[in-house]
Image (cartoon, rainbow over all chains, first blue to last red; front, side):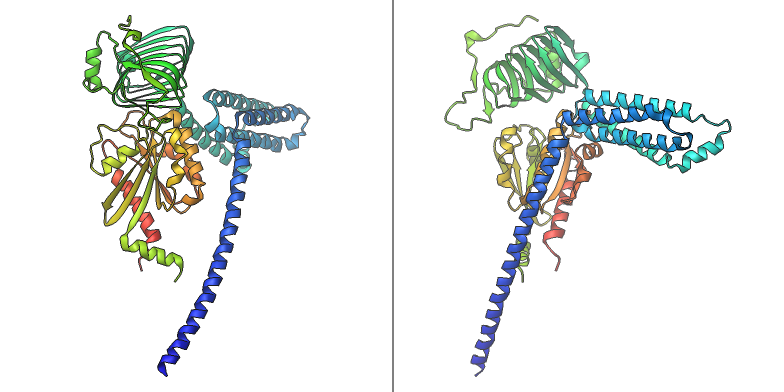
Length: 344
Length: 184
């Protein structure tokens, strides 16, 4: 008897369970589809938003537009009746602040030149507004009352805000500009740099064409970017060398680690103690480091590079993962083709 | 008893966590992993593929996946997203010119649905280098304050000296633990 009763109970609970299960899976499924749809929606929204707003052309167009509006307003000052002058200048200041906020939000994807020039424009605009204001609303001789008015018009707060933003912008600015030492935008020059200028610094070489760079010393890191037809010689680099987007160059380099991205048709005379890697590159020819200059031995000691280990002929090609076949993107420069001695 | 509770119970038994370590190339991911595990860090070369380490730390079993950060490998990152409890994003604080790249990669990762539950730890690495930006600067440049979808925290550290590594990992463990191992 008791057994039968038990069975009934189990039956009931089993049925109940199945029902519950069904409910739950249905609910889960429904929620999942809702969530997926939401995610999709957000994603596309974000994409639209971004591509539209994070481009330099969008920035310059909007910036020029806003600037023109402010200047127009400024010119119209003379037609504004005296009683509304304060409101007029308040709204001018507000649009100026909005423009500045727009610039500081955009600094992340703008080049430093664009940031600087737009900051200059902002500054001159601010000066113009101030001058106009001073001439249109002359300060009273007894300034207490006027200042109080300034307070109550709510101008102090935005001014503080602006200061905060300026600070933020300048941090970001320095973040992107503060390279210790570098050479860029030169054509057909020969540059000779000695240790005192580059020792333990982050050195950058960018946008050079047909130049010869002789770095007789030990930088901490070396960034090489967008070089064409150049020859670069360097003493032992403390840590890493990064070569990006170069073509038809010769590099004579000693370092701990070397990375080459999107570089083609270059010869590299290399001393690397850990490992060199290449990515999206082709036509690279490798030979052992053979640069000599006065003070090289000393620089080696300072840089703590181990002269005994040199993995110059063992590059990892991230676009060639087959281990049984040699990567077609790089080769070892044969003895006959190597330059034996470099004229210093 | 819902499915989640069962999963929780299962995880609780083993106290296992999966951490995924990502970041641009040369950020120091492998160095952090090796340093944390007490291995030699003098001869580390760029990671071709990935490293997995299982560490026992504070009674937890940490499965740490360290995936290479070269551009050509980034498209494979997605293969490692599944069931990640914590994302460790490593930043080379001295590499100012690529911080924008770094920000973009991070924010696109955070949109990944499969990482939506993961705790985010940002390591502002290479603080031993002169000219390294502070954790605060990195926080601003990477716009971490904009992140509302994940628990996140930034720690400055140096993989070479080992400074602050433990603190960072401890935070991520605590945050995950409070989420998945309910103290019932």
